[in-house]
Length: 359
Ligand code: NAD
Ligand code: DAU
Image 1 (tube, rainbow, N blue to C red):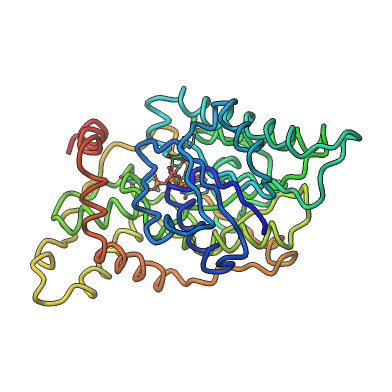
Image 2: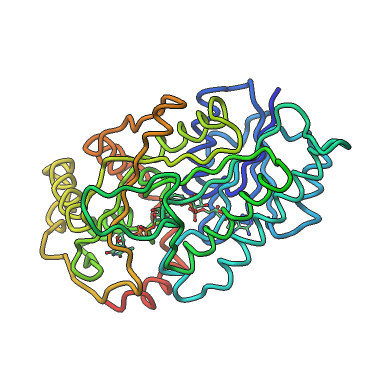
């Protein structure tokens, strides 16, 4: 049975990936989920998975060399899928240091542990071992012109402390590939949305605020463009890259769903109005008047857009979920998980929100 070490599996994309992998492979795989459970990590995301015999959760910090080495010593890990990171751009602007620690040092610790466990005396690696580093399109910087896209060979030009830390971690992975022939891939994905996303990010924040009649903060002129991908499509892409992709290669994941932030907000408002039954009191609260333009994000990248040509051609991946369907599924999930939202927005979230928005 193949054993996966998934880091950051209690976060948004990591938990969706674990659900997807068990749906697809059931008892053919074993997953060890290594997560520090920061504010973004939530074991509630793994309900339905935690009782499986082929699933283990380990609470640890990826920067903790001894803890990470011990996992490799005690388990014959075949695949690493590395999600764990500080992931929110706004937080990185306020406090960059933890981003460098987790995203850069943490990635180095994992690379070293996997290399030590997998390397043979002649410098080659045990058959079938693979490391996949989950990264972002933000490393490529910002596009201005319509019709321009990020390709795998687009030069790195990160602007925020978050994207600079992810770019650094990508460079470390590339250096291990080039120097040690380390068996790794990198995926650079666009903006994800879907179940279990923490409401500091645009889409769940807007859904949650709109349902409570709270203001909807729009940075700057609201015309920044992101290329939105339903999270399950990302999970599929990662799996396909590890199964069918060429080792050592980078693959961009995303594509052709570019929307301005203000468009996203209008789509969410319209979809909420459409989906809420007449009898639901929240219908009254959902209103365009909630839209509130606030100070722009510092260094705000204007536009991201992925060209997924390589992943399509080489592994047959394409974004399966249309945005109209994905956003309805997401909203439906939030309707059905009010308790989840209450739990993640109590406590420290309130302080974060007040400090961040002051509206
Ligand atoms: P998230 O913030 O929801 O989850 C991050 C997870 O990592 C949490 O469970 C957290 O507890 C864990 N973690 C943080 N620091 C840790 C540490 N030191 N040790 C162990 N665990 C730690 O993030 P996400 O949105 O799910 O993103 C996952 C990965 O995907 C990140 O690497 C991110 O850069 C990348 N990515 C995200 C997006 C997106 O749209 N969200 C797009 C492209 C790439
Ligand atoms: O592109 C991939 C990246 O997408 C990932 O690497 C990051 O981990 C992920 O957080 C995401 O980064 P963004 O900064 O693009 O996502 P966010 O949801 O924070 O913001 C999306 C856009 O919406 C961005 O232009 C800023 C804007 N925004 C965001 C928030 C939270 C607002 O206008 N108002 C808000 O309140």
